[in-house]
Image (tube, rainbow, N blue to C red; front, side, top):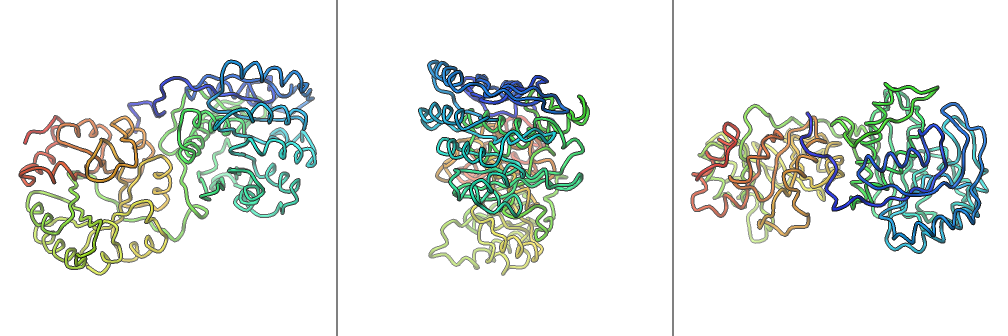
Length: 509
């Protein structure tokens, strides 16, 4: 599947991204590679060297730190042009340079700062001792938003702070977060063998979890840490939410690791990057435990042979009214069950569905759904995505649908391997209080691209007039609430909705 639209979300103007990093004459890492990455992600790159490094893909030969007064003067000159939208900090040669960087970045307000705490080169040369690393880290810590060490760097930082360097990526990420770093992304590539999963651990104040993808044959390449941290800064500078930015940055890295397998330079290939165009399989999964989650068997899929309209109603009487008119699925969503006999509503809806061969989906109330044999599936929101619910629904043989609004939520939903994923809100809707900016058709396409293997349902403000453009992105269904609820004759509209797949032109009532 290819995407007909840019996978990057729109941005009014190119964001200004600073990179403060070491130099790499061969262009595969450091400031030279950072500038290419920023441009490919739609940003304008600016910055300065923190240290000159004589290196290539084989070895680092010598380092010459930039004098603190030179570094400070250059950064002050940059800041006179206006603040950046995000900052990436790479190799910092000593405490004096770290103090200069902290002084300048401390003058910025609410600008994300990503620090890739480079301890040495990919070829093995260490740039500094653990005690020097601790001094640098303490200086930068107050101004850093996210720190992105690999396993070796994370262990060195833990030793420098007097913390245990033992354990896996999540142990190290949580230890560094608790030591005072705002958010920590520990890259797990050094712990993974080829053909196995790479688990990157994310620890923030409000969430921990793993980003997981298969390790590719070209995983031992030059500049991966520079690339990931710079991509994260560029995406945050575009205004992408932090959780979405980490997912998209990891997808961009996987895209480049695939390309690096075909472009060799010296001992280790360098990362080629011209544009943000990850394949669907490049997008990571997210889970609260290491992936694969063996407790989550794949749910039976919503079949794609006969897509159609997917009405969502709030009472069994509406199910009975619509069921005779050519539906494949209908969802009953009783958001406020107070004063309602929930079991009686589900039983009545199920009776109507059985009579007309319609599949009933129960929204939210999964425990009640399990009490009624014959219910086809359950639909859950992200807040209800608890392991006990998933295991119980799977054990009962029901299908599972999950709501998603973003790259991160899709990465989380795909880990569960549901029957289908609902993506929205597509257009402005009056059926519920809006907490998400409508995606529009292009936004739906961006998210749809990340779901290569699970049927997708579009939802949110859909009408017969605005729905046809979505069909180019192969939804298994279109979930409709207001357009049918507010219609004087909703049962007459259902055939027109189903005809959209045969003749994707604006329907008539």
